[in-house]
Length: 180
Length: 352
Image (tube, rainbow over all chains, first blue to last red; front, side):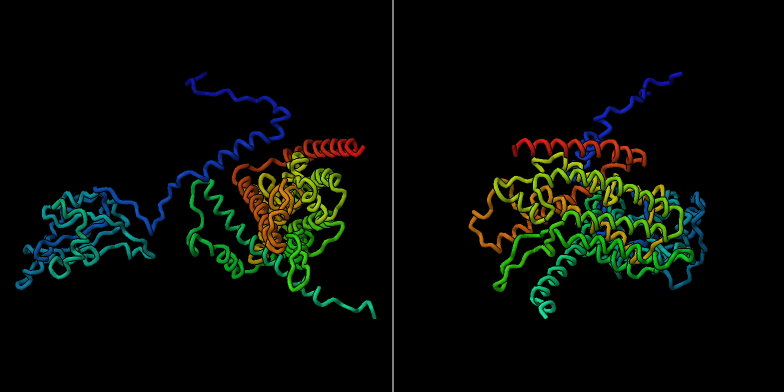
């Protein structure tokens, strides 16, 4: 029974003498391959040329600071709850007197880890965060030899200080600086 | 003591020439591997090797270095002497053929006429055929000594293929020999240069076609690469080989390609003749200049054939074994015979 009308009858005719010499079909084939010599190559020479990321590309996480360089994160745990891959772990601590220039609120994250092997880069942590403390940047996790290397600590993700290292801060902010 | 008088200058001249030609064929073989990968890439819309040096020009050196430093394995159950003899024989026979090819006219240096042909023997083309058929032993011995079923099958395939295609090749060549009346390579080239300067391919298009197809088969190139069919025989007769012994096999194949391209250029495309239908001596250039230009012309023709070899490899799939034998014995040999007989008849008729 025929389900579609797209099937093509296969010709099982024995080859004619000319066809058995293969010459004509071989010449046709060679003309096709020769034409490919002049076609544009779609390859991008990676380390020299880079393909631009989309505006909404979700890459490695960045922990944000405010304009005075204080960490935004209050270790509320909403990102960890929102994370479908359960990649985020954190431990909260209370801000001591004299640390007001380090942390914006009274509570902060003493430990903040994301396992990049578990993370699916969905960006739900970014959406869950009430303090604008975490967002996904335009870079991706580089290769590593050990699993341990993929567990990113707070120091790995924290954005550079906006006053002490303004250039690095602007660079890390990337496209997101437009949004904020 | 007349017999012991040796012309040292002559000896030196030949040694330099041999060294030059051997080095040249090795370098060209090296860069044919590079060209192979580059052209393959272009034909497939890729870029090919471009990391080692500018445009990847150092890639063959890197490949050679890699092969040299790889572990040299001789299988326990193999016949050790033959196992080493195989690749050596392949390499030696590949290089031997370059001796009789006329690479150019004569150079006039230091008041001496130096012919750019190493040995102008009067059975030149017969010598080439003899040495090329010795190349079967390289494959056969390598495949046999490996003591491995796949290698043996590949070696037998290779041997039978080369023997069958040698027949058609010889028959197609006979027609050319009838036109020239000599087996001497320089005579065959001279025949194309003198008079109206017509290349043999114009008289013998079918002969050239048969010769070309057989040359593909002799070099074990696609579509006739059954002896080294990676996907059915896992690399064929050089499966057990590693390090530079494998390198020698692969290298010998590329040298064979280069030499057979040069032979085709010599036999059918006027050798070191620059242009057909033109008398180059009337251009008013000096003799040495013409010789060098002629050498370049021969190289250009050879490179063109090398390109065609590569182009064919990346276009045409492999023949099945029965198709290969059918084509060889039932198509090419009758065609070559007919070509030979017609040529003979025409030559006789014109000479009347």
